[in-house]
Amino acid sequence: MATPWHVLGAGSLGTLWATRLARAGLPVRLILRNAARLVAYQAVGGLTLVEQGDASFHAITGETPDTGEPIHLLLVACKAYDAEPAVAQIAHRLAPGAQVILLQNGLGSQDAVAARVPGARCIFASSTEGAFRDGDWRVVFAGHGFTWLGDVRQPLAPLWLEDLSAAGIPHEWSADILTRLWRKLALNCAINPLTVLHGCRNGGLLAHHCEVATLCAELGELLEHCGQPAAALDLPAEVERVIQATAANYSSMYQDVAHQRRTEISYLLGYACAAATRHQLNLPHLEQLQQRLIAHLATGGLPTD
Ligand code: NAD
Ligand code: KPL
Image (cartoon, rainbow, N blue to C red; front, side):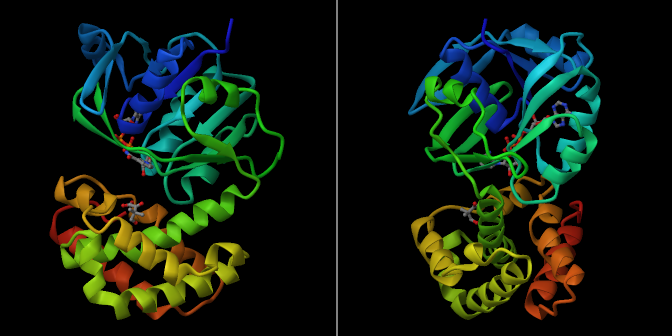
């Protein structure tokens, strides 16, 4: 019997992973917030994946955090700010040697989870796949992409990567997962806050080339000081490339703000500015960007952390 996948967080990415794993015949359990959410889920009986207009239904077993079964393989698919408290709720169920896969964007939440469950093997992931919910218990697979996974403490690839291959989840084991996460964080810091402040699609930043270039220079300096020179390589050109390639899209932070959802600012720009302070680095434009973004969120009645 294959090891069951426990998926914590039945949102966009959690549903995208759970449905593809279940479709491959792998055992999957969905951990919902509480008994009320479990009742609501059981009334529907499963998750729906919408791919290129085709919907498929997957009757995946739901659980609450305190259901008894030990967890060997846990996929954490909550937002960065929810990851550590959500894992704390199920920590007592982790079996010795349990493996925990962390799908969160940005940096900071992974270390918080790892500190909460020191006995578990924590695997960090960075994904370019795109998904959104178009209803309760339904996800639309909006953008095909790739997921890199790695373990900063143990380079050996885990056996369950075979499950991802079986499920058709494009992935690669990465020896430099921190570099990938830092690079993505830098991209997100150079693009996402400005799209919120200028109220534009990613392509709208082509009209703010100097502002973007100044931020890239400061982000490059930060990456060098944080021991991530590889993540700094050709950063300005990569940011320009991403802006061009995603010109018609709204950034994830823009969408969060537009939908009045809490952003992951503390794990992106907030993390970058805190790292600069730790290294006694003066990055005035990045600092100013953070202050402007915080003021904008506060004005919109959104959490500023
Ligand atoms: P989401 O908000 O759609 O889903 C998060 C889910 O976690 C929600 O259903 C929420 O109710 C649940 N949750 C929160 N606390 C919980 C708890 N204590 N117990 C059980 N469930 C709990 O978020 P998402 O878009 O799937 O993003 C998850 C992470 O993946 C984020 O860090 C995001 O930046 C990253 N990411 C998302 C995408 C995407 O396309 N959606 C792409 C790449 C990376
Ligand atoms: O990852 C992104 C996001 O919107 O969060 C991109 C498209 C790279 C913009 O930063």
